[in-house]
Image (cartoon, rainbow, N blue to C red):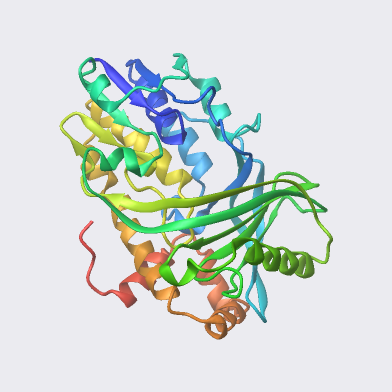
Length: 362
């Protein structure tokens, strides 16, 4: 077999590492100059979204021989709505670095790879399909998927973010829900270290949001964050993204072409995280190529989780700031907090089934 992987992100590298575990070598084609060739940002793996895996890092290491070192363990998450605040405690997950940061997950995974990555390769799917028996599409761009098959875009998102300087606790994250500056979206702060963090504002680009001034929304978000954390932060660098597509492909594979990562639909619509899901799609595609699993069957639970997440998003989009205040306040109730942090309880699945009793076709 000749195997080509298009893209060296989390999904592509997970696929390549797993293939090597089974004795297969893939040619990895990357358009950019290095892995993680983008802005530096902190991201998170929240355990509450990964049931039944309460420790994603342990699972990846012990089950799939992919070893990652997070930036920190999350022990506390603060929630803020317009007029309320609350928090939850416990082992809630991990934070990690992405992009050009020397300790980013991309850099860590590249160091575990035996083979070499072909950089600055602007190859096309059509070109590779003439030479390779198996192609794994892992570019992270749904538009590459749409050239081959249907990709259902749930929504396009607009991002505004910055690396900021201040005084932070590595084990704490902060999440903001306020439609005044995050219409049908959210903002979050994740620490890089004791003195640096990522602050990100993200919201869907629905027609009613198109006329909004992103810079004005960011200013309001910034002021609220400084007020809530009682600090005057300094901006180290900023970035802005528009038209970031979040959706799901129609078919998991076509012949010997596998769609993984965001080319498959690994980003969960409700909050926009998807690192763990992205890596699992890469691992599962490798299992199929190596003859130890069926990709379509393996990703079926992930596909259902995507639809559950989309159900919750569509419901939350109907909320106003008063509803968000009520939800934020309810988190302080011990029973609600215990349900959120219970590792044996898939709260997202339960809530989505209450909202939409019949399981969506995955």
